[in-house]
Image 1 (cartoon, one colour):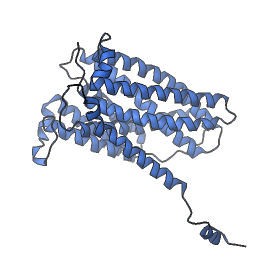
Image 2 (cartoon, rainbow, N blue to C red):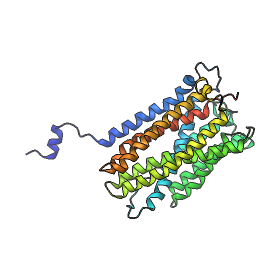
Image 3 (cartoon, rainbow, N blue to C red):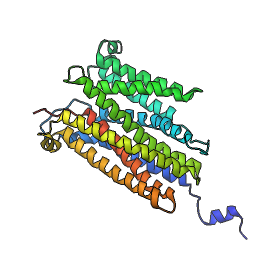
Image 4 (spheres, one colour):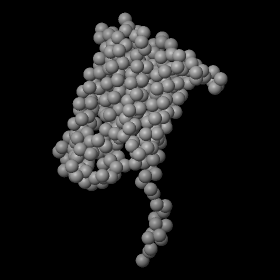
Length: 332
């Protein structure tokens, strides 16, 4: 009779399932990074629009910043849901908040360096006027985002990680204000819409990611389907708010009588159309997961479409980063 070691040698090297999953994640991240890097040239082709230098890099940094917001916000959200479930296991997956804060800090620092050079990509440290950041509105908002992620990382490593909610909220507010300069008509309304839209989007995407990680940590328990069902009910409300604010913001950018034309003739419109299609796919996957959760003999089979939903939401986040870097459509 063979010993286990001999049997393993006879059958070849032992494969670690986690290694294959890690490779798949790295491949997906690499492919997602190509969207902001190659997206501007594709969306601008044939539109006659001009864009600022380095728009691909800026889009990538904004995508990283948005993803870095989703992870810790989703953790806070789902952990709160889990605590409301009677009999839920106290065990929780390892927090990714410190790593997300570090990524967000680097991305915010890169975006701040662009602002410090007059919204141009710096080619040397000498071109960056750090002291001048406090003299402009965009510079001050960039500093808020840098310091917000730094504070969120320190809070995540402290004994009271829930306090990171406050610096993350400051980053969301700063991003909403940055997207709508004071010179814009109805800037306060636009910033308010972006604030609500971004908050709900981070809760939705980050919450689903952490919910699936929590279910994996808990294993086969009754609390798992209960947590996923509770998240699904809240996510339905979040989706309604995201849709309403997204449509309203789009109509402010592109008036209703021009939106159909600009969706195909402008870079902003083309990217927005791609985002809408991806969100529609996310909704289909969410409904599929909800049906499985309610009707399948094993409710945890809903995790299959939910994982696909997380991947698609990740692509939506990347496309959103590209959308913020492209020139705004012309109001006809």
